[in-house]
Image (cartoon, rainbow, N blue to C red; front, side, top):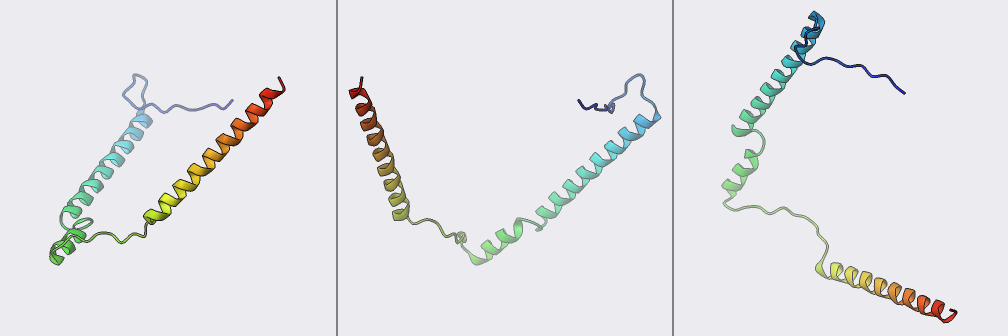
Length: 105
């Protein structure tokens, strides 16, 4: 079994200066991360991330739908029909095997 180590995250009674340095480092990293997120959000509102597409759509005057190659409806219905036939054939086969097994008893 492995032995783990525990790092205190709070002002416990036996906390030394090394522990406080670690806590300060964690707090600084959290503060930096929050500031980066705030900056990203501000840039996004100023036209950074999603607003470029919205501006292009507004200048075009209409909403552009994505061009995606999807499965044709007939292909989907055909696959479902084949699957249904296979399931029904298996169930009929299983039922016939069970009825044949009952003849021996």
